[in-house]
Image (tube, rainbow, N blue to C red; front, side):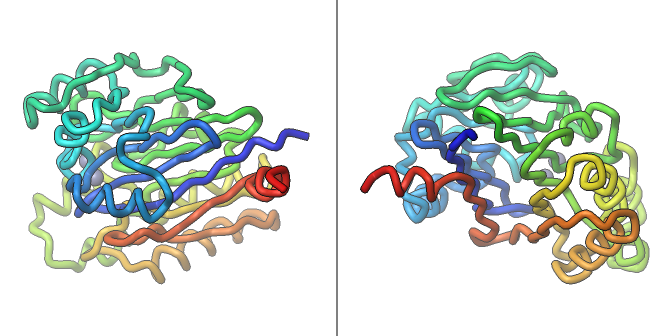
Length: 273
Ligand SMILES: [Zn+2]
Ligand SMILES: [Zn+2]
Protein backbone atom coordinates (compact mmCIF):
# COMPACT_ATOMS: atom_id res chain seq x y z
CA UNK A 1 0.00 0.00 0.00
CA UNK A 2 1.27 3.46 -0.83
CA UNK A 3 2.18 5.78 2.00
CA UNK A 4 1.99 8.87 -0.20
CA UNK A 5 1.90 11.66 2.38
CA UNK A 6 0.03 14.78 1.39
CA UNK A 7 -1.41 17.75 3.24
CA UNK A 8 -3.77 20.30 1.72
CA UNK A 9 -4.75 23.59 3.35
CA UNK A 10 -7.47 26.04 2.35
CA UNK A 11 -5.82 29.38 3.18
CA UNK A 12 -8.50 31.63 1.66
CA UNK A 13 -11.39 31.03 -0.72
CA UNK A 14 -13.75 33.53 -2.36
CA UNK A 15 -13.91 36.92 -4.02
CA UNK A 16 -11.56 38.46 -1.41
CA UNK A 17 -8.75 36.10 -2.32
CA UNK A 18 -7.96 32.48 -3.11
CA UNK A 19 -4.98 30.35 -2.09
CA UNK A 20 -4.71 26.60 -1.51
CA UNK A 21 -1.48 25.02 -0.28
CA UNK A 22 -0.52 21.43 -1.18
CA UNK A 23 2.47 19.84 0.55
CA UNK A 24 4.23 16.52 0.22
CA UNK A 25 7.40 15.61 2.06
CA UNK A 26 9.54 17.33 -0.58
CA UNK A 27 7.25 19.55 -2.61
CA UNK A 28 5.09 22.58 -1.77
CA UNK A 29 2.81 24.22 -4.30
CA UNK A 30 0.03 26.78 -4.26
CA UNK A 31 -3.08 26.90 -6.38
CA UNK A 32 -3.70 30.62 -6.98
CA UNK A 33 -2.22 33.53 -5.08
CA UNK A 34 -5.00 36.02 -4.42
CA UNK A 35 -3.57 37.25 -1.10
CA UNK A 36 -0.97 39.95 -0.45
CA UNK A 37 2.55 38.70 0.18
CA UNK A 38 2.58 39.65 3.86
CA UNK A 39 -0.64 37.84 4.67
CA UNK A 40 0.27 34.87 2.49
CA UNK A 41 3.73 34.54 4.07
CA UNK A 42 2.19 34.55 7.53
CA UNK A 43 -0.40 31.91 6.58
CA UNK A 44 2.27 29.74 4.96
CA UNK A 45 4.44 30.11 8.05
CA UNK A 46 1.48 28.93 10.13
CA UNK A 47 1.56 25.71 8.09
CA UNK A 48 5.32 25.30 8.47
CA UNK A 49 6.19 26.43 4.93
CA UNK A 50 8.40 29.39 3.99
CA UNK A 51 7.36 31.37 0.91
CA UNK A 52 10.92 30.77 -0.38
CA UNK A 53 10.24 27.04 -0.27
CA UNK A 54 7.36 27.07 -2.73
CA UNK A 55 8.13 24.95 -5.79
CA UNK A 56 5.42 26.47 -7.93
CA UNK A 57 2.15 28.35 -8.17
CA UNK A 58 -0.61 26.92 -10.35
CA UNK A 59 -2.86 29.68 -11.66
CA UNK A 60 -6.50 29.10 -12.60
CA UNK A 61 -7.18 32.47 -14.27
CA UNK A 62 -6.24 36.13 -14.13
CA UNK A 63 -9.07 37.59 -12.03
CA UNK A 64 -7.64 39.65 -9.21
CA UNK A 65 -8.96 37.44 -6.39
CA UNK A 66 -6.71 34.69 -7.81
CA UNK A 67 -3.52 36.61 -8.60
CA UNK A 68 -3.45 39.72 -6.34
CA UNK A 69 -0.19 38.68 -4.65
CA UNK A 70 1.32 36.73 -7.52
CA UNK A 71 3.64 39.43 -8.89
CA UNK A 72 5.18 40.21 -5.52
CA UNK A 73 5.56 36.53 -4.72
CA UNK A 74 7.37 35.97 -8.04
CA UNK A 75 9.67 38.93 -7.43
CA UNK A 76 10.51 37.93 -3.87
CA UNK A 77 10.91 34.18 -4.27
CA UNK A 78 11.45 33.42 -7.96
CA UNK A 79 8.89 30.61 -7.65
CA UNK A 80 7.78 29.35 -11.07
CA UNK A 81 4.24 30.15 -12.19
CA UNK A 82 2.39 27.38 -14.04
CA UNK A 83 -0.16 28.76 -16.50
CA UNK A 84 -1.24 28.49 -20.07
CA UNK A 85 0.08 31.29 -22.30
CA UNK A 86 -3.21 33.22 -22.57
CA UNK A 87 -3.58 33.38 -18.79
CA UNK A 88 0.06 34.36 -18.37
CA UNK A 89 -0.34 37.19 -20.83
CA UNK A 90 -3.47 38.40 -19.05
CA UNK A 91 -1.74 38.17 -15.65
CA UNK A 92 1.23 40.14 -16.99
CA UNK A 93 -1.06 42.90 -18.21
CA UNK A 94 -2.52 43.22 -14.71
CA UNK A 95 0.87 42.99 -13.01
CA UNK A 96 4.14 43.13 -14.96
CA UNK A 97 5.90 41.45 -12.02
CA UNK A 98 4.21 38.16 -12.88
CA UNK A 99 7.05 36.26 -14.55
CA UNK A 100 8.89 32.94 -14.19
CA UNK A 101 6.21 31.29 -16.29
CA UNK A 102 6.28 27.58 -17.03
CA UNK A 103 3.90 27.16 -19.94
CA UNK A 104 1.23 24.50 -19.38
CA UNK A 105 -1.05 24.23 -22.43
CA UNK A 106 -4.56 23.45 -21.21
CA UNK A 107 -5.02 19.69 -20.92
CA UNK A 108 -1.32 18.90 -20.61
CA UNK A 109 0.42 17.30 -17.67
CA UNK A 110 3.77 17.92 -16.04
CA UNK A 111 5.83 17.10 -13.01
CA UNK A 112 6.66 19.45 -10.12
CA UNK A 113 8.90 17.59 -7.67
CA UNK A 114 6.87 14.74 -6.21
CA UNK A 115 3.63 15.99 -7.77
CA UNK A 116 2.10 15.51 -11.19
CA UNK A 117 -0.28 18.28 -12.26
CA UNK A 118 -2.73 18.51 -15.14
CA UNK A 119 -4.99 21.38 -16.15
CA UNK A 120 -8.43 21.20 -17.74
CA UNK A 121 -10.63 23.89 -19.25
CA UNK A 122 -13.46 25.49 -17.27
CA UNK A 123 -16.07 27.88 -18.67
CA UNK A 124 -15.61 31.32 -17.07
CA UNK A 125 -15.33 34.90 -18.29
CA UNK A 126 -11.52 35.03 -18.36
CA UNK A 127 -8.84 34.46 -21.05
CA UNK A 128 -8.36 30.70 -20.77
CA UNK A 129 -9.47 29.57 -17.30
CA UNK A 130 -8.61 26.12 -15.99
CA UNK A 131 -9.03 23.76 -13.07
CA UNK A 132 -6.27 21.46 -11.84
CA UNK A 133 -5.78 17.79 -11.03
CA UNK A 134 -2.86 17.25 -8.65
CA UNK A 135 -1.51 13.76 -8.07
CA UNK A 136 1.04 12.19 -5.73
CA UNK A 137 1.56 8.47 -6.38
CA UNK A 138 -1.94 6.93 -6.01
CA UNK A 139 -3.43 10.01 -4.34
CA UNK A 140 -5.32 12.59 -6.37
CA UNK A 141 -7.19 15.84 -5.88
CA UNK A 142 -9.31 17.91 -8.24
CA UNK A 143 -9.77 21.67 -7.93
CA UNK A 144 -12.16 23.92 -9.81
CA UNK A 145 -13.84 27.20 -8.93
CA UNK A 146 -15.06 30.11 -11.06
CA UNK A 147 -17.03 28.05 -13.58
CA UNK A 148 -20.43 28.79 -15.07
CA UNK A 149 -21.37 25.19 -15.80
CA UNK A 150 -19.92 21.74 -15.21
CA UNK A 151 -18.46 20.26 -18.39
CA UNK A 152 -17.34 16.72 -19.22
CA UNK A 153 -13.71 17.82 -18.80
CA UNK A 154 -14.48 18.92 -15.25
CA UNK A 155 -16.34 15.67 -14.49
CA UNK A 156 -13.33 13.74 -15.81
CA UNK A 157 -11.12 15.73 -13.47
CA UNK A 158 -13.20 14.49 -10.54
CA UNK A 159 -12.74 10.85 -11.53
CA UNK A 160 -10.73 9.00 -8.91
CA UNK A 161 -10.15 12.13 -6.81
CA UNK A 162 -9.61 11.50 -3.09
CA UNK A 163 -10.18 15.20 -2.42
CA UNK A 164 -12.52 17.37 -4.50
CA UNK A 165 -12.41 21.15 -4.03
CA UNK A 166 -15.36 22.53 -5.97
CA UNK A 167 -17.06 25.91 -6.20
CA UNK A 168 -20.41 26.36 -4.45
CA UNK A 169 -20.71 30.07 -5.12
CA UNK A 170 -24.36 30.91 -4.63
CA UNK A 171 -27.81 29.80 -3.66
CA UNK A 172 -30.02 30.36 -6.68
CA UNK A 173 -32.87 31.94 -4.66
CA UNK A 174 -30.55 34.14 -2.60
CA UNK A 175 -28.98 35.41 -5.82
CA UNK A 176 -32.39 36.03 -7.40
CA UNK A 177 -33.73 37.95 -4.40
CA UNK A 178 -30.45 39.56 -3.36
CA UNK A 179 -29.04 43.08 -3.82
CA UNK A 180 -26.97 42.54 -6.97
CA UNK A 181 -27.95 44.52 -10.07
CA UNK A 182 -29.69 42.54 -12.77
CA UNK A 183 -26.48 42.67 -14.85
CA UNK A 184 -24.44 41.22 -12.01
CA UNK A 185 -27.05 38.53 -11.35
CA UNK A 186 -27.03 37.58 -15.02
CA UNK A 187 -23.22 37.42 -15.06
CA UNK A 188 -23.02 35.18 -11.98
CA UNK A 189 -25.74 32.82 -13.24
CA UNK A 190 -24.43 32.68 -16.83
CA UNK A 191 -22.62 29.73 -18.39
CA UNK A 192 -19.33 31.61 -17.87
CA UNK A 193 -20.15 32.83 -14.35
CA UNK A 194 -20.11 30.85 -11.12
CA UNK A 195 -21.46 27.49 -9.95
CA UNK A 196 -24.52 27.39 -7.70
CA UNK A 197 -24.82 25.05 -4.74
CA UNK A 198 -27.15 22.86 -6.80
CA UNK A 199 -24.75 22.65 -9.75
CA UNK A 200 -21.99 21.74 -7.33
CA UNK A 201 -24.12 18.96 -5.79
CA UNK A 202 -25.03 17.63 -9.24
CA UNK A 203 -21.38 17.46 -10.28
CA UNK A 204 -20.35 15.68 -7.10
CA UNK A 205 -23.24 13.24 -6.69
CA UNK A 206 -22.21 11.02 -9.59
CA UNK A 207 -18.58 11.05 -8.48
CA UNK A 208 -19.38 10.02 -4.92
CA UNK A 209 -21.61 7.22 -6.21
CA UNK A 210 -19.00 5.93 -8.68
CA UNK A 211 -15.81 6.34 -6.75
CA UNK A 212 -16.70 5.58 -3.13
CA UNK A 213 -15.78 7.65 -0.07
CA UNK A 214 -14.46 11.10 -0.79
CA UNK A 215 -13.54 14.30 0.92
CA UNK A 216 -15.28 17.35 -0.47
CA UNK A 217 -14.52 20.99 0.19
CA UNK A 218 -16.95 23.65 -0.94
CA UNK A 219 -15.09 26.69 -2.23
CA UNK A 220 -15.48 30.28 -3.45
CA UNK A 221 -18.75 30.91 -1.55
CA UNK A 222 -20.34 34.32 -2.13
CA UNK A 223 -20.59 36.47 0.98
CA UNK A 224 -23.84 38.01 -0.28
CA UNK A 225 -25.61 35.21 -2.12
CA UNK A 226 -24.74 32.22 0.04
CA UNK A 227 -23.81 31.16 3.53
CA UNK A 228 -21.70 28.24 4.75
CA UNK A 229 -24.79 26.62 6.30
CA UNK A 230 -26.93 26.98 3.18
CA UNK A 231 -24.16 25.70 0.91
CA UNK A 232 -23.41 22.79 3.18
CA UNK A 233 -27.07 21.77 3.55
CA UNK A 234 -27.87 22.07 -0.14
CA UNK A 235 -24.85 20.11 -1.34
CA UNK A 236 -25.14 17.51 1.44
CA UNK A 237 -28.81 16.88 0.70
CA UNK A 238 -28.25 16.99 -3.06
CA UNK A 239 -25.66 14.23 -2.85
CA UNK A 240 -27.36 12.17 -0.14
CA UNK A 241 -30.60 12.08 -2.10
CA UNK A 242 -28.74 10.18 -4.84
CA UNK A 243 -26.32 7.92 -3.03
CA UNK A 244 -25.87 6.07 0.23
CA UNK A 245 -22.09 6.20 -0.09
CA UNK A 246 -20.48 8.06 2.78
CA UNK A 247 -18.35 11.15 2.27
CA UNK A 248 -17.06 14.05 4.34
CA UNK A 249 -17.85 17.64 3.47
CA UNK A 250 -16.29 20.89 4.67
CA UNK A 251 -16.67 24.52 3.70
CA UNK A 252 -13.55 26.54 2.90
CA UNK A 253 -13.74 29.90 4.67
CA UNK A 254 -13.43 33.15 2.77
CA UNK A 255 -10.96 35.07 4.91
CA UNK A 256 -9.15 32.63 7.15
CA UNK A 257 -7.39 29.27 6.93
CA UNK A 258 -10.00 26.54 7.31
CA UNK A 259 -10.26 23.08 5.85
CA UNK A 260 -7.22 20.86 6.29
CA UNK A 261 -6.58 17.47 4.70
CA UNK A 262 -3.89 15.00 5.71
CA UNK A 263 -3.22 11.74 3.97
CA UNK A 264 -0.59 9.27 5.08
CA UNK A 265 1.16 11.73 7.40
CA UNK A 266 0.88 9.35 10.34
CA UNK A 267 2.90 6.77 8.45
CA UNK A 268 5.63 9.33 7.79
CA UNK A 269 5.73 10.54 11.38
CA UNK A 270 5.94 7.02 12.73
CA UNK A 271 8.90 6.34 10.48
CA UNK A 272 10.80 9.19 12.17
CA UNK A 273 10.99 7.31 15.47
ZN1 LIG B 1 -12.77 34.14 -8.22
ZN1 LIG C 1 -13.03 34.57 -11.77
